[in-house]
Length: 303
Image 1: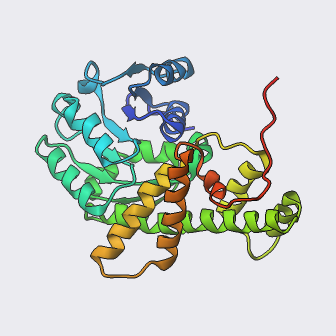
Image 2: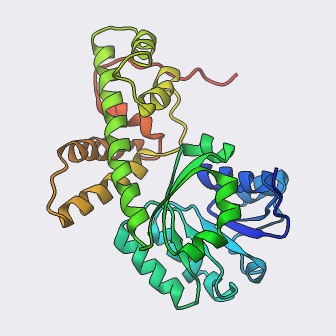
């Protein structure tokens, strides 16, 4: 395994994705720090072998060769990088890999603000979920300068199986991710609808799952998310409210282009309804709870 012991990186945001990315960086030999407001997450990463942990990163900012941002949205990214004062403490030309899902315009705005601090940005959303983040096999859809790509190579090698260089312009990576989320959200909604219909028709859900995952109607989202339904486990990895946000970005993008997205709109409405019913912080597979008068498996209580 290639080692990069002298390369120092901070991962901002230690949720399910960020924690996996940070651990992958540690396993690859990068000198890795974690930044998060949650002290439990900081302690967890420190135990795994992080060189530093902090709620702001100000105390070690000038020692960093790169920063990866894995927060929920553009507002959190700005708060962590700019409002906190971190950008002012980083050395000029430190590359910032921003991997939250946001609009192209938000990515451009953040890039301009970072440029004032002489900090180049890679617009680099990721996909693959917590499992692939832990494995270091994410898919990265990124845009930015060749120089910035080059400076972030140790990070990209540590966390990604596939890196797509979308183009040189900030915003192109975010646009691809938003379009990708149209498919992801629709696939989850369709998977939930099929499983709910089976429940109403008194088809054993394990049987339907086995049939679909061995037939043409299968999708990655059906195979992954409907396991949650079978287990009655909606512990959050990617929440209902995240897809309210992401499908909202799809809607905004489509409206700006005067382009219809009828399936995306239907999926968005379903996620909104489920969120308004009190399930917004459950895993996105809980969108199946938008279908009523069906019997779903319940997780066995811990003994």
